[in-house]
Image 1 (cartoon, rainbow, N blue to C red):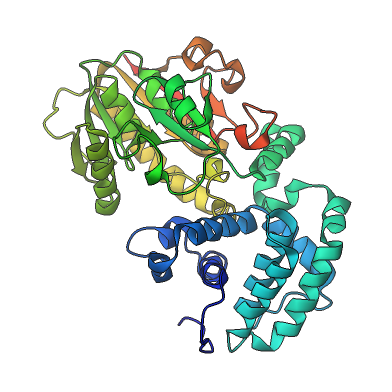
Image 2 (cartoon, helix red, strand yellow):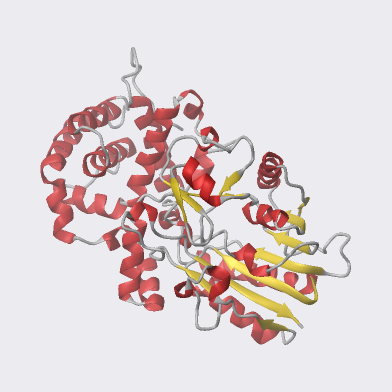
Length: 450
């Protein structure tokens, strides 16, 4: 049941955006709903339909900022509240987070941030009694909040303890802290273009990365940017654009892209000349893939099926190449999906490892002798990357690793492991402007079937 609100004679400018932000935050933090589910598709918040583009952008940035800095916000508010954040009125909690995030990190006047948070509380029956508390705490936050952040000086507050412990154990404390700092910054928009990256970098006021991805700080609706409607490019993190390139020359080859939606890697393979079969178990996600390919004027065979059980359709002789972009804990995507940090639990990894093992076994069976298997995950957890491949190689004598050369990844030797696998980290590709630096965390390995 949505919280009951007092009727308001007229909407105060900016209040609707903050009310929707509060609803979505409640969905993530208390109902374990992803941001994607609440922002797009059938489950999207109904209020988004009437929200102007400017307010929609503000709402998205507000929610992302809160989730990106949730641990730090908790620290600041705990120091400003004698009895802790009220637990009997979720809207009061949301109002405090929304107000504090604007005061500390966003270009919103302090008085407006305080006033709108108070109005947000007043419009909810259960939370209205906390209006005075919210007003007082946020006024103190405007005066004392930044010194409270400076006293801890640690972005590791914004990474769940279990996840930070894992990263320190696997990558070392210095790298884990660098990753946490990278995750605290709002990321750029990364774009894969059909051709001429330099020209598109100029048109989109961005820059071209060594790998050919165009990176820009433009904000707002992607659909309104030059070249989108004409199908000249698609949104894809620079790290996510690397695995599909590991097949080498695919012109005329048959490639199965398992777990293919939303289709960025499928598009890369088609553009490179491959005959692609895209497989995904979700009808909704497959519909999105088909829409994306139609906009890009690219064609693939599309199959809605569980890739771990799919028999390969008409390709009885096996595929020349198989790309497995396996379901995973997605901890490498926290830069762009900060809700992942707070929705995932360590126990999830074990169940996902079983899915990854089944997918790898099926992919091996679908591959022709001499064919290439590229396995990738957007996870920073070794069980879902390095260990998954070690287990496969131990159990499948007919598979061998084909190490990736630095020349295949634009000379970025720091993103390769000693075994020759790909391992990108959020702190890779540093830049003077932190918003233009960083990569999603990705793992990829290339195997050959003998």
